[in-house]
Amino acid sequence: MIKLDKDKKCKVSIITPLYNSSRFVAEAIESAINQTYQDWEMIIVDDCSTDNSVDIVKQYQQKESRIKLYRLQKNSGPGTARNKAIKEAKGDIIAFLDSDDIWLPNKLEAHLNFMIQKEAAFSHTSYGYIDEEGKKINDTFHVSDYPITYTCLLKRTEISCLTAMYDVNKIGKVYMPHIRRKQDYGLWLSILKKGFCSIPLDLELAYYRQRKGSATSNKFKLILKHFKFLKDSEGLSGYKSLLYTIYWGLNGLKKYYL
Image (cartoon, rainbow, N blue to C red):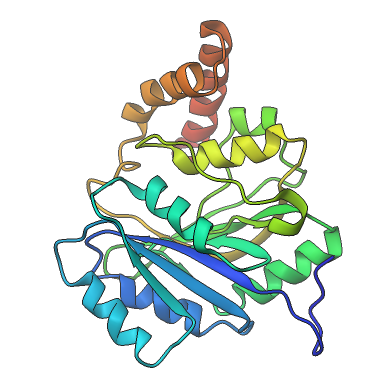
């Protein structure tokens, strides 16, 4: 079991894919450096950026030895970049922070203590939103008040990558499927299919950056992709894929229109 005491701490491996994020990556790194819990490593994997993102990371490496940088040989997508980082991770806990998102300073401390209290192998939290300029959007995504099972997640994809953490000692290393979209969702489902639940913590501990033209900016276009993912990647029947997509779509619409 993880123990947060002076004699023995658990190390957190922060998994960060990087691609043309020169505007934002410094904020992501700073939010890790500013954590009240300091036993971490940040593994950044560059997916063939064409801007100066890598140079920014290297500047931080000069003064922060906990930051590790790897570079892929060809552009392969964020799932492959995250998998490389997971493979290189040395920590007891795997956590995820994309290069354009940020954590609040108490994210790791509060979340780790919660996981210890609940004896959770897998957990996620609520989160807020910021715009491209870093200004807080007056909105919060609140997690459920019950453990999330495989079936629950098929109906509502409430586990966001920037809040999820899992215990390697309890679950083992779990990787993302080799697909271009919804790799994180595939990872959560694979953990839940092992019989684990994700235990929610309803505290806003991170900020997701909403960017124009992002893969999640048009909710209606995502509906068909969600159906195809459930049918092709999860192997559900057409009927079940449609049923769970309807649940998923209605839950998404509630957030935006009710």
